[in-house]
Structures are given as C-alpha cells and as structure tokens.
Image (cartoon, rainbow, N blue to C red; front, side, top):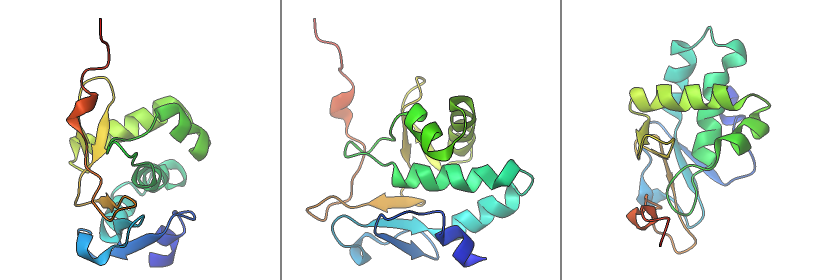
Length: 138
C-alpha cells in the first residue's frame, strides 16, 4: 500500500517520513512528506471517487509556493483533471481537520508542518510570510 501513496508524487525530490517531516534530514530543494497521514486519509476517505482526497493532498504538498502559501485552485484543478469546486472543498475539509492552515477567509492556505515541509535553495524551511498581507497600495 505504501508504494501507491508514493506514486502520487511527481518528479519533485520527495523524502517520506513515518511521522512529521524532519527538516534536518532534508536537502535544499527537497520536499518532506508525512506518508503516514496519507495512509490515514486514504482509509478515512475510502469512499471518495478514485480516492481524490489523497490526490488533492499530494498536489497540495507539491504546490507549496516560495511564499509558503498554496498555489491557485484552478491550477491545482487542472493538474488533477477535476473542478475548482472539488479542490476548494477538499482544501476546506483539510483545513477543518488541521492538515492545512487557513490564512484568511478568501482561500489562502498553508500546509501544516506536520504534513509537509519544503526547503528552499538555501536549505531553509519555507514558511508563510506575512508581508503579502498588504496587496493594494493607494
């Protein structure tokens, strides 16, 4: 069953952990993922069509931007060959269960460090930055 979860991830250098990812074990540019959570999601949402829950969560983990937040929902929907509504529904569910952190009520999310960690090119953990809060300047 473990290989099935690992197949969800593409060409990104990914390291799998049996618990929360350990930043000290990751190299610059790596993505550390808690594979145990994927097993739990797969079992819990076993009735979901084609187990879209695991596919959305894998896409979320790989979509951590340099700002620390997740990318656009329509891009995610296109990668997963599904609708934006489906992606939004799963992001909201994962935020309700604590796998994602809701940054605002407009759909801005970040991944909880117990789920996945992404390292930047310098070997630092990418965390959400608050300097994006002021978007409009008059």
